[in-house]
Length: 132
Image (cartoon, rainbow, N blue to C red; front, side, top):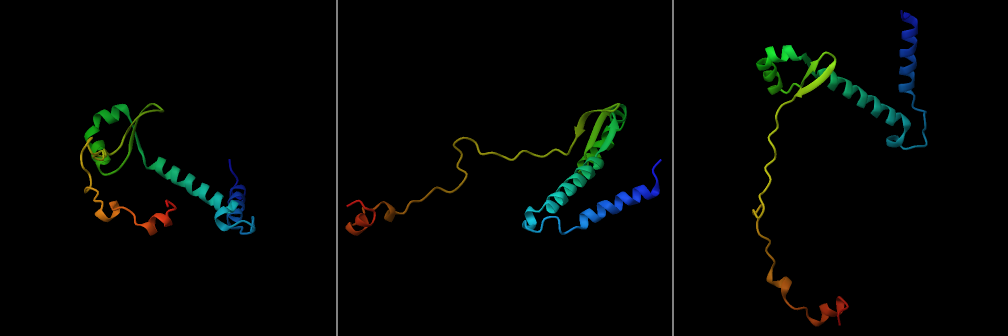
């Protein structure tokens, strides 16, 4: 059984570590170990929240309530179907594939090259480019 004081002590210690500004003042703020630790903590919390947001249902429940689960999926929810503790499948909202152009299909306006770009160079331009 956890003691209330031990748990409180760990919370205070972790809070004091997060509040420290003097870990390495020589490094720029974006490269400091504190910034890296905060980013890691945010990533872990986001992963945990994303994992918790998924509804996990057993196979027999999924079979019985498939239509209501599909309604939840259309609202943006992710549902995991499991057998016992083993996860078997994930129901996610369907995303239409992005239409790709077919071979030879014109996807933009034609490139127009002005006539001036194709005229012969004069003597001064040839000397500027080192061609004469």
